Length: 113
Image (cartoon, rainbow, N blue to C red; front, side, top):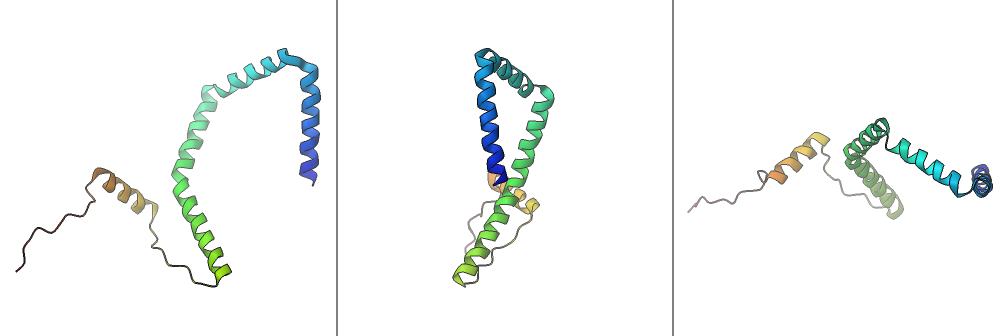
């Protein structure tokens, strides 16, 4: 409840200040925000955050999936199917071998009579 009140108060303050300051001040604030966003130090941190998220996304997806399976099993009373666990290094090795085509199964061409 406290958060909602603060949010509404922030909206009110922003509206009042915005209407008093006018378009000129808005343009100044916008220019300052763009200058900050385009700063090389800020962009370096943005790139680092993107790389971190890309690295951790598969682990988070697996964690969420496992949690969802547990919830479903509790609700339905059924045991979830056991999924094989792979480490992130095994997952990336599989991805690399599949991407290059070297991980594809080769047909058996030997004839056994």
